[in-house]
Length: 506
Image (cartoon, rainbow, N blue to C red; front, side, top):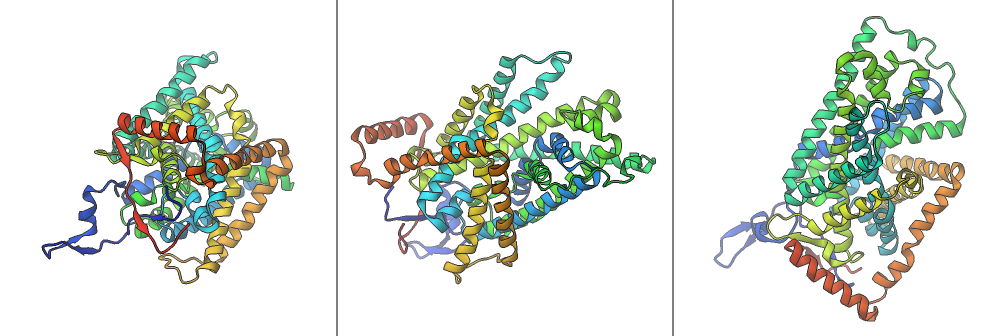
């Protein structure tokens, strides 16, 4: 990709153009035959993407971690509320960024716009090498664990069976998203409804129990609270794990119908829904279960179901599996667009920004994402890899919102359809400093490994991005060109078309 051209997404507002016969046509009509990703994600699809990715396995498992480090029901509920408020602040900041910088790619696109290609590439490299494939592999393994568990009720399920089912899950969802964007969004909608209904069933059960007088667990609700800063930080980390995913829709900004309206509206609808569901779900857990029962459980929701659902207790393990399935679908959709945008900006091979000539889906990026996740399924202790990216994840999220502050100062007159008070990004950035510092202090070795993984992208950037193409090794250029031709033929895809803004250069 040429270094002197800046690419920007198509305008979000329809305008008119005049053809040779003098008849006006809309840009939307003219773009019908253009090779670009189509705007097929509605407001409802956007809400389901955010809610579906946020409500993964975390709310079924994380209550144990929050309660273990907080020490009491009262403080744990406060931690859940703080986690929700923190996520709302971040999501609102991303709503402004998404309507100001109308590119897909979320934090990668925002860091690229604010701080340039090098830091953006490191963020992309970290996602490619550790964050996206690891998280998807873990979600797929969790899905397979809950699906296989009923078959082996008295013993541990076979390792190979778990991994093969996880691989089948990744392959199936990759195929669905390759077929049509609408297929992916319909799967997302369906499984989001399923997991929300399951949690509503848990909440209603808790409310009924409270109405029947089961309030003894809330006597002296703050008794035993841990006021240690380190424990509170770890409790907040466990809660934020469940809230992660609020940036999902920003990965597909260019595919949203009327993004300047629907992106912030979807965020505004989703965040209160998830926060209220999470807090009420925990109240239901705490109504039925004693603290020792929660701390001894590997899956709090399953223990809850065993006590109150009777012969229907199988519904909760199924709900966890369905929740993971929907969360994995959203993650695959988002991650493939990240690699697609990275390729379009010249940070990954051009073959990854190709789209199918008839289905208008980024098939090469989806296949690449799926292949990376399958590779990580071969790592036996994959859960250890999660510890490597906590530092990097929060660092780059905080950096993208610091970029929001920087662009406010650098480009004060830039059009901003949604303009927040600076209080929101300032508070969020201060909180992310805390979230970055905690793992450096409490988990120094794993954090340093994560930093090392990020810095391993420096020589790759120098060789593949910084050095002009004609000065790169001939064998590298020939290999990339041959690979691009092969992928183009196999995937029946062509390079995406973009509007070119010649007023600025990179």
